[in-house]
Length: 188
Image 1 (cartoon, one colour):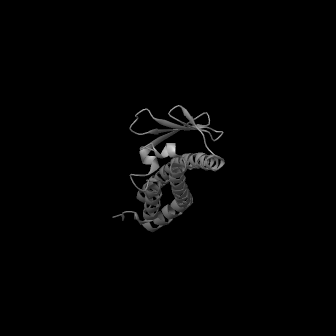
Image 2: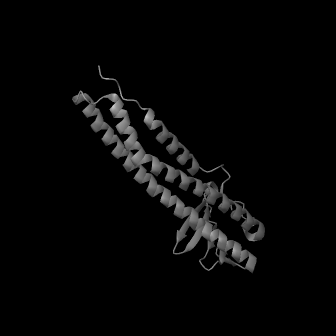
Image 3: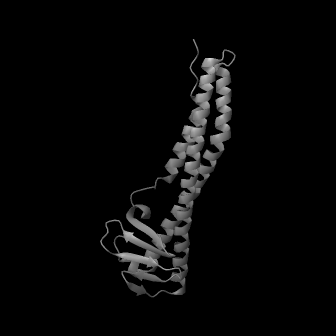
């Protein structure tokens, strides 16, 4: 009887994937990313209520602010805050895209490991000189080569994204405090 291969080598990968995905889940329901839609069109950031009541906030690439079609006058301090907020949104979007690309690469690498494992299972059944210990060693080596490094990088990106989201949340609150027109919007 041929012993079944161990799945123990896969546990670190499952842990890495779970921790990475949890970094991508927002902290709470009151997060700005859960309350509003943020779109970017031709360098303009458009923020709308998720309830889609027709209200919007536009942040232009020159740091000007438009709320529901009305240009809002801002002082230099507010403009600086708008600029920081503008770039924070771009940072979050960029990291989110990078995580998505790395997630796809991780999935492809996982598929490659699965094909490798299947080939080794066939080898395990066909060749008497190949045993389950060798299978475990081969699989450990393949997982380490293909997945662990990618998983660690993906986890780092997730942590960086979480930090950037926290910064965006803080800037959002500062914007509301500094610009009364934004503070009057109950959804913003």
